[in-house]
View: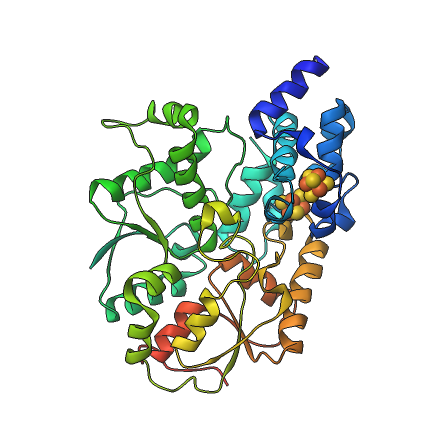
Length: 128
Length: 262
Ligand code: SF4
Ligand code: SF4
């Protein structure tokens, strides 16, 4: 996809203005998934701003975000990084055949007492 | 008082006790819950992207039905509450999004008019914690209880508006109202890992254990939650103190349920 178009689309979908970021790193410092992420919330903001989007699109980091809204709450500039993480993830999984999780994966992940809520949430985040 | 009620998928399956004691305790406190007819699953997590419409329709339909009945809409599962409240906020504030959604709706356009309460908010703001206090026995007296908010009840604070997202008091006030003693600890509003339990159980384990250890270090004998997934993650990852729904404790305090915890 055209790089400029992709960048504009991500900003439109997320409503995020990466120019507001002052690169303090607070979003990443508070992120409970930090240790398992290759690119951290503040990097999503700066990399989208720089148009360096391809590495994000193929990174497992997209599937490590917990949607806990901590970075949204705690960013001192109101940048709301998780909205960008989500927009990039949607661009990745909306492509045909690119679902990160499908119904076929569920039996192997299923546990007796796992609440339905976990499965519907995972589907909402990992597949289209 | 009559209130529309959205139970959600998990309360009809793995968390039927959460559903049952919500109904029974509300009734005992003078609130009759009317379940939304033909409600559909909220989807578990709010999709933040502004161009996601279909994933938010089930919430709007429930909101619209409550509004048509001139009732507030009440939820009890933290996840349903978060999704429905954020969707309602988007309907109020994002005209373009609301217009897209309304194309799928019959009759009058909906613009986020319904009032949304979590059961805890209803207890605080409508029933009143003082009224709760008057109705409970002292069976829970002296019990040290840690409130586990997790992420979904409070955040994003400017949308959820339940309480101060970094220094909440609603669950501690609830614990006081049912006669027990709240334990405050740092990780009460940090994430248990949520649905990551499926993708990366080790990450859920790390987060959940951190919450339980922190609560215990502050002297908690029990943890309460409103969320089936928080409860699952904490127990699955080895919580060695009881993790229970706040509604169960309310039922015990009101004499609706026997106290089976030590
Ligand atoms: S917390 Fe906000 S301002 Fe700081 S690095 Fe993250 S996005 Fe930028
Ligand atoms: S919402 Fe995602 S990116 Fe933001 S702090 Fe939580 S896990 Fe990290």
